[in-house]
Length: 108
Length: 175
Image (tube, rainbow over all chains, first blue to last red; front, side, top):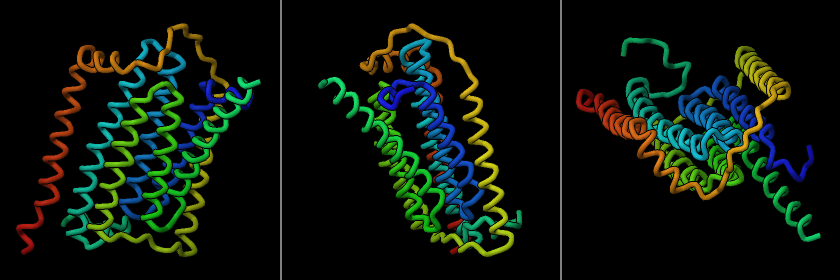
């Protein structure tokens, strides 16, 4: 494995995807606000999309399957971000805070 | 000789994209200020768009910049403006313990995944990969994956409507 040919290797991309997933996982437990957890979730989704694209590039069953799935992931992530934004605003209206330690009671 | 210089240039560009992606992700996760966190996320997605370009999908790279950097990061900024969040400084004791535990779990996850990757063997595929797949991508989206495509648009419509309903619902009763 040569430094020059790193961009032609499947495993390099898979390692980057795994690192992105692990970093997002770490942030998901570390951040104490809903915004931070949303950001970490986006990182996890990005790692998954990178894996799909890498397999679509190096192990293609079809030239565009990986790209199609990555597009679907982007669409789902956009929907998720919109929903989470509205939930954050609703939660903030109830509790005056979006820190996870303050969101303790179920009844509003 | 020019070929060597060319490939060296390509390799250094690729390495810089990798470094941008990973350092942006680390910055998004490690910092205490959420504005910096969003900036790290945007940086990471820019690097990821470069990686997508290296994976022969320039359309996806463009979509990554347009949707993630342009739309989702701005949406998160709006959420922060509307809700005024601030992460507490870490207090010793339980907070420190939780940080250490999550670092341990994430490190175990990363090393486990990378070890699995080192042991895996992939089949050799001999399908031709070109980089000008945009027309075929459009055709596939409208024919083979047409149902999933329409379903995604319904999901997006419902997400917008649901976001409006959830964000508006408390407003009438309060005032």
